Image 1 (cartoon, rainbow, N blue to C red):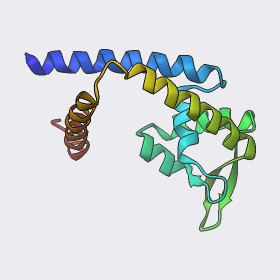
Image 2: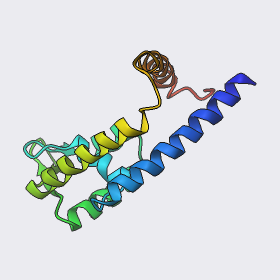
Image 3: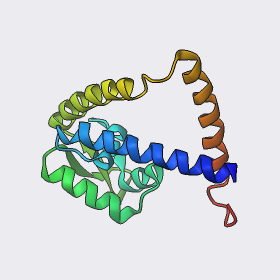
Length: 146
């Protein structure tokens, strides 16, 4: 029973954090998913669409749609992958770098405000527990019974 209560609490916290992210990022015309993609990109090498999909645990069609939206607004561009002409790399534009930097500053400030209810010792303990839980979930990601 305690595991279900903890799960529900984590879920509720996720929903509240996600709502806060939507509110902060909307000022920069970004969704949390778009912001997550921008955080993975750089302006020089770029990254393959399949790699973005794998890192964010999102379907390739979802990533394609997000990148289409970001490309339409001039924040990213697609280029052929020099190592594999069948693949594409997504590269951050100068405007994308500027928007990401501004959004990241606001997002970081928002996180500090939202987490201020915890004392430094609480932060350290929570970080340790959440890291342990995340690793367990990652270790069992491909398990059919998990």
